[in-house]
Image (tube, rainbow, N blue to C red; front, side, top):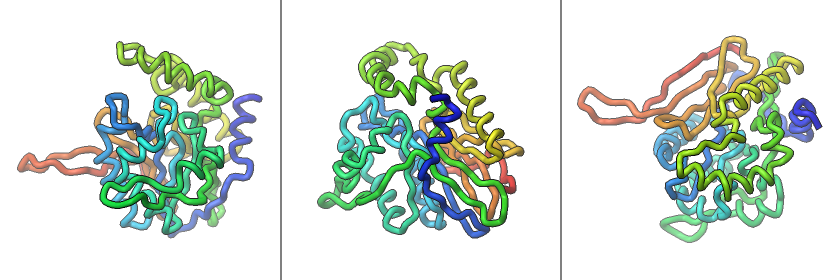
Length: 288
C-alpha cells in the first residue's frame, strides 16, 4: 500500500467534529511522555506543558492529541509513565470527563489502537495523594479525525503523519525493536537514529513533501505531527504542530474563532529576573 493510500485509510471511520465560530481546539503531538529516566525527553518540558494544559482547560478548549503522546517504543510499562506524570494524566482526565478530549495514536504509541491494551492500561492512573483514579474508561484511540467546517470552508484532517513513512508505519514492529534495543543505547553514546523522521533531515523533508502533496491532492487542510518540525504558513494547507520535546519550548496549534495559530510555550523573564511561562504566537492567526 502506498503512502497516499495509507494516509487516506487513516480517515476510514474517523470521528467528525464540528468546526464553528465558537469552536476552540488545541492540537498537540509528540509529547513522548516517558518514565522519568534520562531518556525521558518530555521531562524537561513537563512544567511548560502542564501550564499550557491548564490554560487551555480553563479557557474551554477541546484537547486533541495527534499521536506519540506516550513513549511506548523505548518503554514497555505504561503504568510507569502514568505514575511519573500523574499530574498531566489527572488534568487530561478532567478534559475527558467533560467531553473535551480526543486522542489519536502515532507510531510510538500505536499499541493504543488495540482495545485490549486500552481497557487494561487506560481506565485508571495512579494518584499520588489517593487511590487510583479514573483516566479514560471506554475511550477509543483513532488513526485520524476530521474537523468539518460548518461555514463551508475546507475540512481539516488530523492524523499523526507516520503513514507517509514506510519504515515507521508498515514496518513499525521492526522499527520499535531497533529503537528499543539498538538505537536507544547507541543514542546514549552520541549516535542519531537514521530511521527517525524527527532526527534525519533528509527523511524529514521527504515525509513533509508526501504530506503536503496529499493535502493539495485532496483540497483540504492536513495537520500532523511526527517530524517534530512546527509549520504553519498563510496558505494553510499542510500544517505541523511540532512537538513537546524541543530543547527549550513546546509548540502546538490553536484553532479558535475559525482562525488557526501556531503557538510556542516557553520560559520568559520579568524585569526582576523572576521566571514565568510565556505563550508566544509563532505564525498566524490565519482565517480558515
